[in-house]
Image: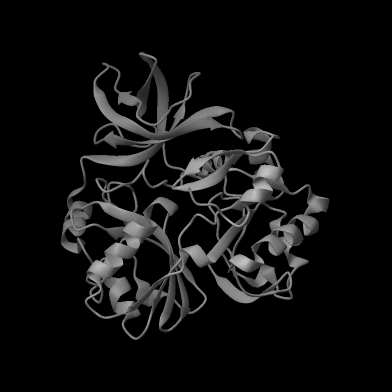
Length: 364
């Protein structure tokens, strides 16, 4: 099992550790999931996300490769800008969803999910008829996500860069906490605001301690993967392996907004996905809110008022903010309209829910 540069710090802090995507990761700290969740929504929390991948795509043919394998229009990216996108698998499904950074005109950084690093790198190599330069730097780079409304104030102490000037889905590379070449990215997986930092492994522990010293006045807390899941679910963000996978199309997954059918971009599955967008699909990934007591979980059946199967839950939790069960799932046509009534089978009982479009809470 792999470790991150911060593993010893998690263990010393009393975190409950568990395997995740081949890494020994912190799931929850002694303060508990609810306290961690609230800390991010109202203050500031720090996630070790060093298990995520980092793949450099470089050279004069980098754009050609990326335009072929991704659904979003990479040509629109300016230097210092970021894009959310996904990789069609040639069969209508998704290899992975990822974040794409334009570092320079012939230099891009791709950030795949931890469980898909090798899969994505192999897919890039397979599709690389252009001769783009590929470098899987995942084992050389550490990553921290500092999230919450107090994140900017805490981090501003550690850099001369005006963090308030970094727009959402933009980034800079600059000295941070006395360390060089740190990518400061105005992104995150929580909807609570904040930044993600990419750093050399040898700088990681120094930066961790600097962040916690700077954030002490804001009661900064380390946050585990369990609260990361409840936070992303309140925003309706997809989790690969739950809400999207090799069998779900971007159109079914309500990711049409990152699927660009423009004339200058020919990408894998373009014709198939264009047909799905034009004709519609038999199911859609939608959000829902429980109207009665109950917590939806991955794999639970979704039924209609007659008890007939009309979908399946992909993600679900009790929202710490709403104090109400929320979830996402693939729901068949005819039952996935906004405000439609559906039922979630929980312990053989059909529990009423209402279809809605995430986010479930206001974006903070």
